[in-house]
Length: 474
Image (cartoon, rainbow, N blue to C red; front, side, top):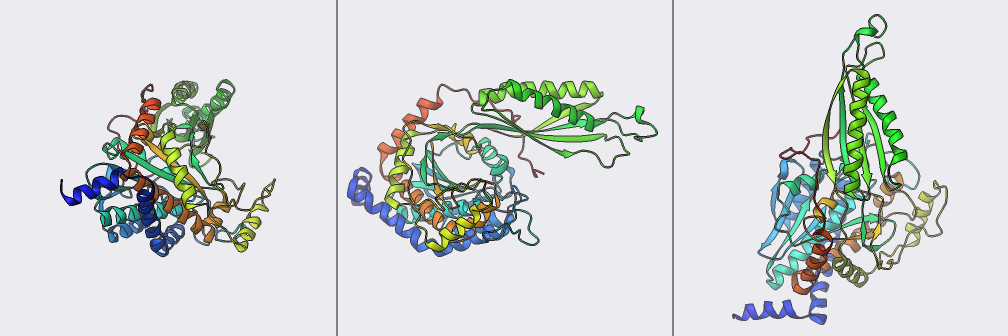
């Protein structure tokens, strides 16, 4: 074996002090990059681009990573804003997820009272500007250590658009972009800091389009067949279905097309549904019933309908080994530390809440759960976790008790509160990635946990084979 080979073998097998030194190198590199990462986050926060339209946000992250020496595959999986940035070669392949889409109707200035930004409709009400920038920083820091120590392996940053409609990662997964990944790491803005050991809800997103016949609504109403009537009757049936599903199920809808004007019988109408449940098997059963309700509405109105399924996200499968590893590194880095000015800002955002928490901003790390909890949100990370072991953390970057998808999240993440969460997340992910690169036993433990949870399950998706990603959501 060459001298270089001996050194690499020694690093890969040493734990303790040598491993801590490598983690410290990654953490120090994040600190060096922080001014660039904060500037990157601020740009994405200002852009506030919604899913599949994140052209400037996606380009900004790619531009940063290209400058750090990454090779970029742009426009992957048929989505112009999706990309994969890679550095290194061979195994292991450690991926980090980055999101950067904003939410419509949540425009907000970086101020503690409700105040929309002039000329801007959307806002980062789920913290994805912080998410994308921190993940890019973690990948760049890990790459720096791999390069300096001449370690084998591939570090990869997945730029995943349209998470808010659970689209990006599904189509990237279907395109085979996660096939060779060994581990995928992720994180999210929250009002607490912890290693995430939890299931999410599965969710299917479907648009029901009804087709009828136009007619003068006063002179020739008998000649018309109202697609809007069909939509409304379907919604009535779906509301009655709510009584006959498990309590964990959620059925949400919006009417995206209800016709043009009242004196024309609407020949076209559309309703967009999200159907969620703790387990995808339940989503499958409830969606079959929802289809029957749509059929009944079409029969009652003598219309026809078709269904477009944009996405079908499975529940996240938790991985104990990765949760433990991330918890260890999160504690090694430490939680965000906020000053009194930031506390005062957060307290003001809490004034709009019905019940005001005693804490303005959490500055502790929550205990790692002994058993996985059941979450109430959904994400397309779920599908990735059915393919490869996934680990995730949450880092405080918003006021305690404020709801996700709210103006308070936009406001807080637009300040130094968001920047401090960014720093902790980037450092934790970078340190964890380096530990995985240099500790084969950690990789094996994650694989073992993955197979124990995943192997008994059958993967079923409503997305038709070969379907291309949508070019627009709304």
